[in-house]
Image (cartoon, rainbow, N blue to C red; front, side):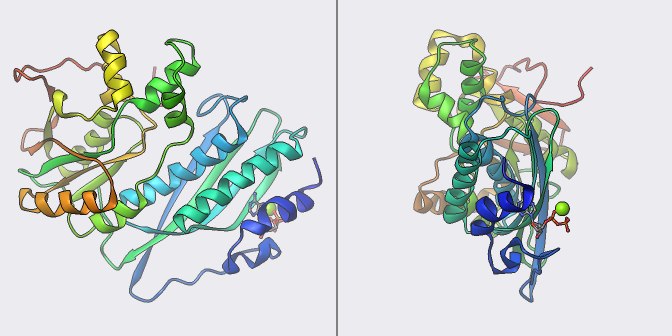
Length: 319
Ligand code: ADP
Ligand code: MG
């Protein structure tokens, strides 16, 4: 690998916006427009925990930035800047770095976010990527987890379970399927919808740890509960086919992480507006349940029977 300064200059300076000063100064200089709040989120992805060492560099870069873009989407924020912390083994190749930075450039073009700075160190144990991302919302308008109201409908975007099943393909637990693996390696953040949702939703979170876990964060923060209909949870055609053959994998759609879809609650009177908004953006939408007074998230089947769900999502420090 070239020295740290060459590396930054060659691969990352081309990604910097004007506020990053070409990554040639000690710090970036950001300006927030008057009347806007700056929304800030940080994520860290570690080899062996969040991705495999032999995953494509493009996937590691993509997932790292999408995790942050998805947090911004869940807050209704317009993506603006990000800072990139990189810890790399000393034998990292130019090809790896080129593929990594190209994937970031592609996502920057799609989302409008720009690199503003970072830090680069040598690692003695695999790759670690840490991104701090910033976006803006009109003052006081950030979507929160804590404002769901009893009687709200619960909505989710897209389809759930593909990423978790993609991971099972890579772990050789099920037959490999390119669609599922692609959804695990190259998820999409719901940026455009998130920005518009701020006008309609009461509470919102992104689904990184699993539907029940992330909806559980909303209900706990709001002091409410939710009933979710299992049959209404949206599945892609691939997942539908797979579950018809292997129904024991069904928990992937409510406990599986990494889909980066949005789960949100809104007053029933907003349903038509939300449906038109999603249709205009080409985002699939499903109403899957409602917010209740009784605490906790309950999953019920077509007959109204409670489904036993066990562990509801990914946790790092589980005993
Ligand atoms: P310092 O020693 O002051 O921390 P560095 O040499 O680490 O400075 O960084 C120099 C410049 O390069 C800074 O603007 C920093 O934000 C930027 N930078 C370093 N590493 C990265 C990276 N991985 N991605 C983006 N910018 C980076
Ligand atoms: Mg530094």
